[in-house]
Image 1 (cartoon, helix red, strand yellow):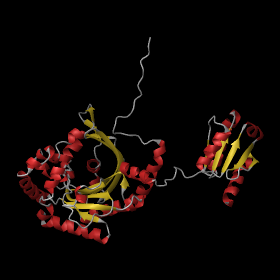
Image 2 (cartoon, helix red, strand yellow):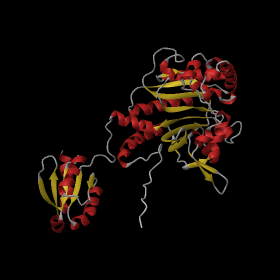
Image 3 (tube, rainbow, N blue to C red):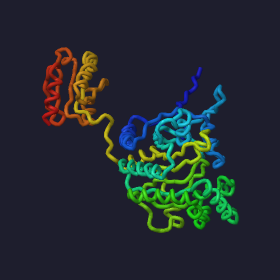
Image 4 (cartoon, rainbow, N blue to C red):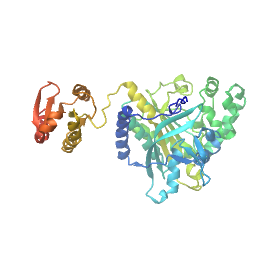
Length: 441
């Protein structure tokens, strides 16, 4: 009987694991990011790996009738919920705020989360995302704080120059008026637009402004700008925000084509893009602004999110952003940044040879570790020579060689890696000897 060949199972294209040799990059990013989040008084929340699909459908409202097609969903549960993998973080923050009665806490509530998102758009895609959100304050000072935080994080990660693309889509009154003007502008030009933009509905017309197809970009160069249709309240909010950014020397450029089309979006919209601020040319007509580099942070204000998710018409206002940590780690690796190994660089390596030595190695390792000495060890069947090569790669100062003879005699060979000089030390004295030697250099 011929056995059927078993094909190994691999992840689908577009999704990924973070394998051990990659962990040091992620650890470095998390260490720097978590410190700044604590400084800015954001507290961590860990979300369930799945959400009810209706969370994302309802939060987007009529602004995006394609969102259900992007979700990676499972069958309905016994309770009738259709579960989905997280498509974005923004709705999850507000869902948690409402579900756990956080309105009773001192306001605003400032949270952050890190999770993997997944969506379908010409294939399956995933990314690790850091999200921050402030709920319960509608002032422009909150928007400014979020932008300041994003700036400090990018500076700490040393990714090079960056700038913030800024815009406002105003309040509901501003947006409705602008949508009417925009539809009128496109009416005589839509035959020249791409098929996607020609099919946009009245409620999703703002999506045409962010289209990257050449024919649509050409038409959008002369499109009306929302800054000319803002209500007095929206103008004042945006002006005061820019004053905050000027005071803090945040590098920004106003981009009238930057929008958010979700029903919950309102007022401020911003994106952090790596690279210096573009020249002084009009961003509405410059090729640099028309083809911006991919954003590493996207954010804004979410005026109606609470209402759409059942928080009432006078629900809590929110603002926040999401950072693509997968892109950040890729940039760090591409730059060749020197990233330390996890746990720091050890000072001592413990090698062994023979069954008797192997049985005692773990206890000797524990004694050295508990003494506060950074130590690594090997229980492999490799030769002493091979284990010493491992010690060299780790950059340790001393190697301890523990063989059959040493195990029987209660001794350890201490080898200075730089000179190769070796001496035999009684096992009960090895910790004191190591401490003295390490302290002397």
